[in-house]
Each structure stands twice: as C-alpha cells, then as structure tokens.
Length: 221
Picture 1 (cartoon, rainbow, N blue to C red):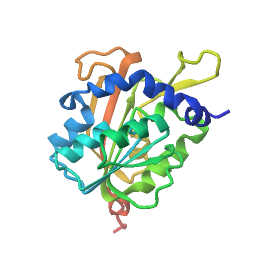
Picture 2 (picture 1 turned 30 degrees about the vertical axis):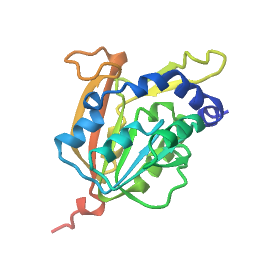
Picture 3 (picture 1 turned 90 degrees about the vertical axis):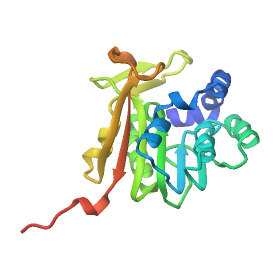
Picture 4 (picture 1 turned 45 degrees about the horizontal axis):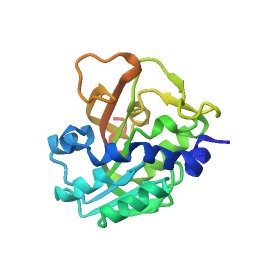
C-alpha cells in the first residue's frame, strides 16, 4: 500500500488528533511561512495551502487581510470538520498533494511539512501537481526537513507498517526546473523555529520561490 493511501485512510486523522491541541496554541509570529509573507509584504489575492490541517495558517492570512480567497486541501476529514467549524471563510477540499482535484491557479501556494510523507515514486507527480497550481508570476512557499544528505526515517507512530519520512532539500526540486527563482530561504529547527545551530536530523528549511516560467529563458544572439 502506498503511503498516500495509508494516510488518506487512517494516519491523517490520527496525526490531527495528536496535534489538534498544539495547533490551537500556535503563535502566528513564530510561523516561518507567515513571517516570510510579512517580511516581503506579500498580499496574494488567491492563496492555496496543501496539507493545511484545520486551516489555522490560512485563517491568519485572511485575518491579516493578505488575501481575498483562501483554499485548503487536506486529507484528514477530522481536520476539515474542525477547520470548517472554526474558520468558515476557508474553502476546504479533501485531497492529497499528488491529486488535489483543483483546476484553478493561485497567486500563492503553501506546502509546509507535507512532502516528507510522499512515496518516492510519486514525488515528481507531487512537484508537477504543485507547479500546475502556481500562477505565472505567483509564489510558492515550501518548507520541510532539509538535511545535508538524503535521509529516510521509519515512521515511529506505526511500527507495524513500512512507512517512512523522506528528508531532503525540497525547494531545490523547483529551482532545478529553471521555472522558479529563489526569493528567500530560511533554515530552522523543525520543532523550535529559528536556531543558529541545528543538528542534521532536525534541520528544516523554508523556501519562498517565485514562478517566472518562460520569462526566465532567453533567445540566443
């Protein structure tokens, strides 16, 4: 069974159950994606977050007046139910990063600590799906574990299954395409925010990228 199927069936709800209380206590000023939006004074009209949990980050973006439409894609039905009750301004869709079910494009797409769950055989499918949803000239905020070496770690919450988290510098996947330019990149401790020294196992990074598309190509001569 693919990890996508396992998380869609059971683990997404279990993750939300374990973290629901912590999400309610999240301090927006400590969230690196939100800090980057503030630092660069971005006010995207249409914002999508893939793997949004109950939508708390989108709710803060809307509260700050940075967007007129906020859309969440999330595999957990429990998270969607909680978010729909708490944050009625958010438009929720149940789906996964490889198949969001959406057709429109967005001025900003956020994918934060999602890609390390994706099966390696579906990673490029996830990259393509995310890229498809970012409008030309729009922005992508992608954050995740970012060790120096490609790493996989067995998922300790389900030792009965062959599940892993996959760690690598994910922002480089879009930069390597030539279709995106790097606006900013922050390294951090995945559980404690900005830290001057982080061991490789706990190192994370958040990239703010701008989609330039064909504008980045030049004709010879």
